[in-house]
Length: 160
Image (cartoon, rainbow, N blue to C red; front, side):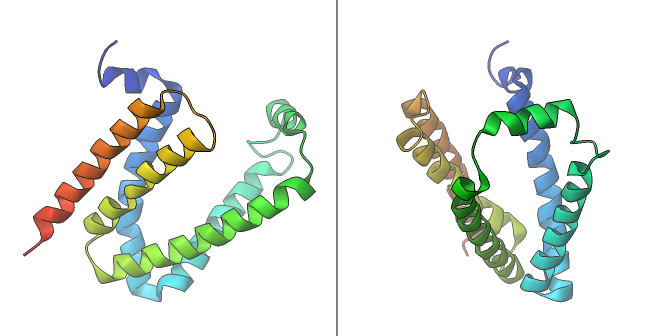
């Protein structure tokens, strides 16, 4: 299978294509939520619902519990003490970034916010190649740059 068909053939890419569709719908819902209650209240409400849902799934009897989840947890091999600082930094960065994203959504069209947000693909690709040593760095960075050009095109078309 060649071309874009390979995206659907890869389980990871298939999941992320579905996530992209969900996030596209969710971005519009975010604008409605921010307009109704403000950025911080919307983000807090959203995270509480997400966290509560995931907690329910992770409790005994939840869908994410069982042998596979126990095996995955056992393979981690890292104590909370080693992971907690990274978790706290990631949570803080995620919270600040999400609130700022909601403020941006309040101020402009959703399509503009999402186009700019795609710059994270370039940053994530660069960090993955440099810090994590991910394979095929040149190709990944080139693909991310193409996405950035696409985002810039969307933004350019919005200029008066």
